[in-house]
Image (cartoon, rainbow, N blue to C red; front, side, top):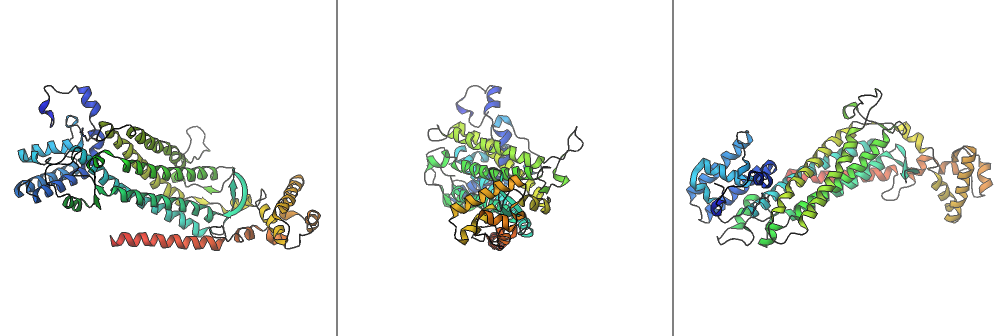
Length: 465
Ligand code: ARG
């Protein structure tokens, strides 16, 4: 008979069992579920709802189940519906009737909410570590390329010269914010709903503070309806993960473009590329393409969960069981993506000469030429117009700005002197942009120092935990 079968006079249709059972996916919560049950039983023992001997038996039994699951010795049953009732059923089989006391003062509703928060907290820590590792890889490449000049783009058109370090450090900033979002989400998730019961708490005098301590939560929930019925923490993980994937997808897109024959800014390692079954010459950037592609499913999970939740009256509704596959797939996808993109980037070869070659074309120093005139006293808008005319002239003559003679310069403006050549030199163009956050070598090095300090703080924090 089912654990809830008392009021039923007939068994479920097998189709029904298949439809509502969640064990095929929520089995991955087995550890959190057993941890939660051990804490609950221990607390029931301490308030005298369970005799010490009963508590010991239950805790012992749960620990054995955990061990057996980890050794692959347990087969879960669809009939037992979900991980919570599977563990309980196995415990009853193992230790007998005393196991039937475990569910005292508890509901699957506060149980699943607790399991999922424990799971979310653990996964956030994993993802944070993977982000940190990717940041470290990007910083390592940045350190070697603070003088590697490349064209910066707007509208995918050459705009102004920057360095590869400056470009990669932009992603470091994005990923650092992603890290912060996960930290924020963690704080709000760090609240224990156990004790909320099905929806209205319980008549047993539970010591929620003790369970909280045992499960290492920062606080306990303050409203039993909210405790069992919100999944905003799931949405927060999915949202933070969506932003991570959006950033990884943009980075991937650049890697794809940079590795084309047209750009050749980088060469991907063979270990992270694939060939074509028909075209012998092909070397495809599949990792980057897949990361870009997989971002879509993560965004989908975010929207799916929001849509699933938006019409639910308080408190628990079975719709909420749909939160899990979305969350699990989000976490899996983000972890796999971060894990693979890191060595792909870490092993790519940077073709500095190609970057410089392209930076020297397309008038990336035109703004600097206009700035030159403005610094000599010509209003910037007029300077802009003069240089615009010069660019048109250069296009006609198939020349770049630095290939014009001083006489040609002077025919456009009397302000030009011999120092114009230094002013539009790409190295000058980069290093004169020394405003905070700019691409100047010195400025990017300063940024790298501050990021390294932040990384050190994270490592120190981890060591002191
Ligand atoms: N498997 C369920 C879920 O994931 C657990 C809670 C079920 N509660 C209930 N009253 N049916 O949401």
